[in-house]
Length: 350
Image (cartoon, rainbow, N blue to C red):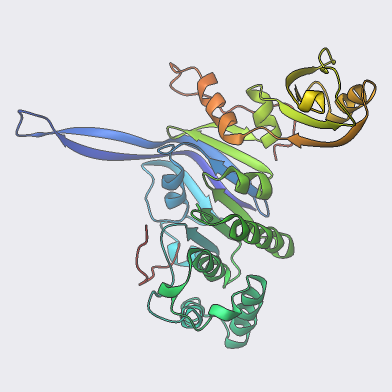
């Protein structure tokens, strides 16, 4: 069974704007999600990205039953999110980066106890799962601390633990690492990868932090003005818009510029040619082939590969689209693997 199935999903909002000099307000219809269709297999890890206003959060709210679609169909874990919202709440976990499902003034331990009761977990199973999450997310020292006194990184780990307490089939993360430092981000990413491998949890991640997508997801969906404009791998996305990788080589000594190498372009040299940067199209030339060509002309001491900046890739994808097309089809590259939140009395943040 697919974890997510949406077909021709559309959500519109009606706004009333007051025009200068007129007493009546003008009615305007905004389409936040426009005939979107995709599926996510159970156990997959999928990134859902796009600029602000692309329709990502609206899609998530329809997947979880918070919003009713204007048209089209949506099934989450085989259920209709609005009609079967109570049952769905026991099978999904949701983390919104700027909203809390924890009890603000209670110790963190009490929030877990209350959530276990809401989900009707067996006491022994709840204690075992809580202990497992506390250990893996390194929260033992904060269990007796009121949520309001936790740092942002501590609270975000607690939010993810709360979303996973009932072992959901699908975990939806909306900006889970917003505002976190590098170390906190890395810890969360490692834990989410472990959880998915150990329990087969399906992961849908929407974020502006491309590091999250690169390290956690095998497949990426790109939305633009409510429409799906790409569905495939990160590598395929880069190839679609012609973005290249960069090979950085540190040589044994000053070397003449490594220009004219097959399938590569010299970008820059440093230290009299000791370090040189070469751009190459991964679809036409592999890093190994380029390294072989470099080694034939100079002794290589060290090297690194810089992957394309995904934000730049997305920008290029937007620019490559035909602005006059009303119903663009998603890009599907031929290469590369394509592979209800509970209501909480916690306060809103951010």
